[in-house]
Image 1 (cartoon, helix red, strand yellow):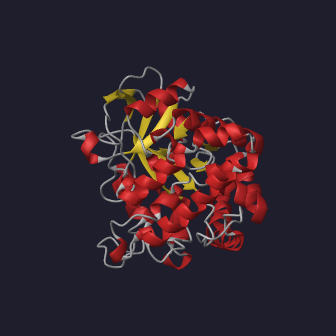
Image 2 (cartoon, one colour):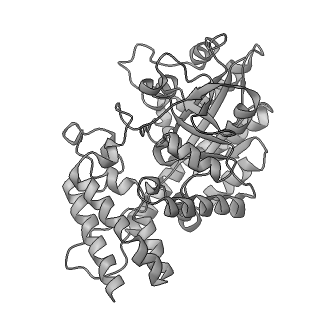
Image 3 (cartoon, rainbow, N blue to C red):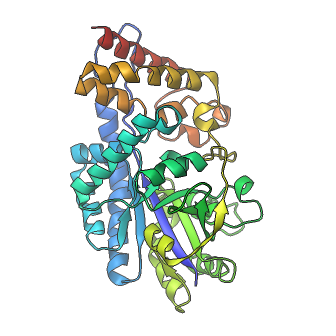
Length: 390
């Protein structure tokens, strides 16, 4: 039997407003733009997709799905689209939806401050318990950034599992269709994204030059069935905005998803599991050693989307240099602002790798260039320093 494990990332950053070097206003974030984007994506993606998932959960008692909802996204939903929170709560209440833990601010804190990382992870889990009444058991790091050290640290926080990218350079001859145990750990288990099948939905679905276009649920179910005899899990990890935003409703993505469970389970050979269920159902296929950092970003699947140039490195270094002073200030508003500035999107906007080609780095990007993003961010950081001095 092959178990399909759907995991969706639900995230929206607090985007910065245009902030000049002469600005002294401590309101750094573009309230109008953030509200507009939040409501637009709620209308096109979150609400219709949640209705679809609820229909599927009611129609198929064996259907299951997992989500990671960032703290900054949830904060925006509570302010500007509370009906989205209610719709996720309805999904969780079915008992067939699992919520994962992550850093509350969708940050890169593990790379710079283990203490800040720990505080954000615990804050996020507490928020999930407060809002949805469930305590996450499995962890996902920002953008699936992962290595052996992260797995060991997260195991120490008490989580039973962790998810990561099934990067070819760490798997070698092995397959993402098995459950693994991270090197240096004892209890925690590792699930790896099947990026080929995930990307068929997330990126290639509406590409009319793709030989498999238009992709049918029957075809995709056949691909899943081929895993039988070669593994146990098909981990389909992707942004939730795949539905209705990256792949528009006109592409047929909602119809595809509606029919997929029928096709996967029609002969009783395959099923669906949450991430925890997959970890519990299948034995580990041995240790997997991931000594260097990997992620699910771009073809390189490394950290270059956030740390690929001097601007990004400088901005991150200067941001985390302020940690001790910000926390010592005792100012909760300053601390919250500083933590919102840690959201990985701010540094993704500074990426220069593919800027000239106009790729995914420009999606929802409020800046005309990576250099504008860097200058704007550093102007804000200067004001944070001024507040600390005051």
